[in-house]
Image (cartoon, rainbow, N blue to C red; front, side, top):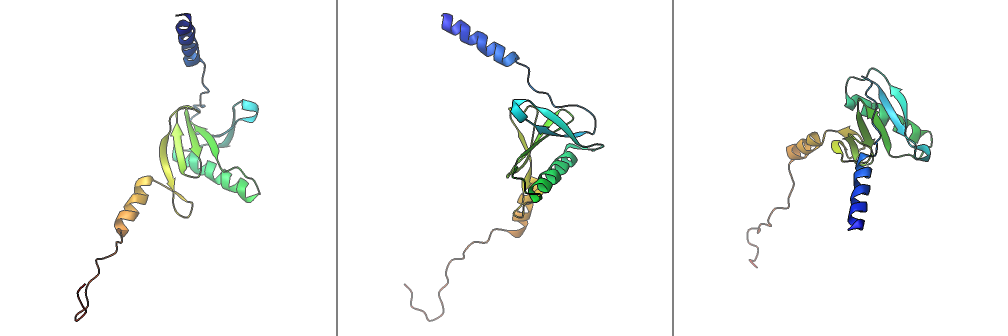
Length: 143
C-alpha cells in the first residue's frame, strides 16, 4: 500500500514539474539551444508574421551552418509560445519540448520544404504508373 501511495505522489510531483515554456514575444523567432541541459533562447529574426516564416529562418540558419562545415542536422526553435522542430523528415510544431508534435512541412525529394498535402497532390496529378497486362501478338501461340 505504501508503495502505491509513494508512486502516486511521485507521479503527481512529476506532472506538476515546471516545463520549459516557449517565449510569447510577438513576431520574434528564436533558436533553442540546450548546452549542459539548460535551455537557452537566441533571437534569429524579428517581425516574422507567421510560424512558417520562423521555420524558414531556422532552416536557413541550419543550412548556413552546414555549408560552413557544421554537423548539426536538427534544429529546435520557438515562436509565440510554440516550439519548432526541424529534422530530416521536415518541420513539426509542438507546445512543449518533450510532448507531442504536429507535422507541418515535409521534405521533397530534393530537400526543400512543402506542405504534405501539396506533395500528395503532385503525386496524384502524375498518376501511378502500373505495368499493363501483357497482350498477345497476332499470330503468337496462346499459352
